[in-house]
Amino acid sequence: NWVDKTTVCKIGQETTFGDKCERTPVVVMEYLGFKSTSDPLFKADTAMLRLKDLVPSDREVDFYDAVDAFAQNAEEASSMAFVSSWGEANPGGGKDRVALFIERAKNNVIASRDALKTIIDILDLKA
Image 1 (tube, rainbow, N blue to C red):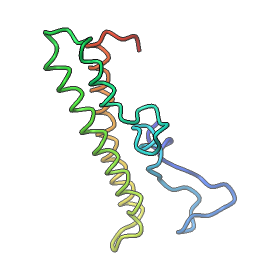
Image 2 (cartoon, helix red, strand yellow; image 1 turned 45 degrees about the vertical axis):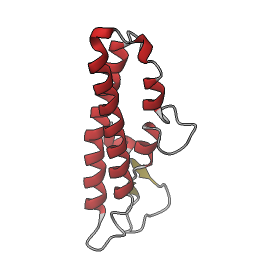
Image 3 (tube, helix red, strand yellow; image 1 turned 90 degrees about the vertical axis):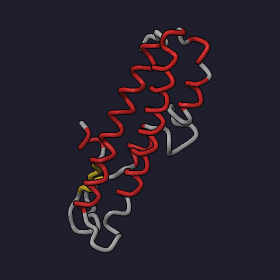
């Protein structure tokens, strides 16, 4: 599913190097709330910290660790996605560089998702 979501094919129009499909980081930044203030996860870590009063006292450390992990991995994924958008423009760059950084972002997206699941479990929210 990752490749499908991070690939855009232009019907009837070729991309820069003559092919019809190219990898794009936009969906990564949208998913993690870094593209627009209206994205669902925009500043999610700040919202999560406002829920601290709902955290059972025996899970406080786990909660703060999960919020930190979410924020750090989301930021790193967004950074890798942004860097990938310049992969072809940089000297020595190419489609392989774009794909490399999008795949690096994937690992951070997975880690963010896992941290978010931990937060949901600690808060006993219905997902």
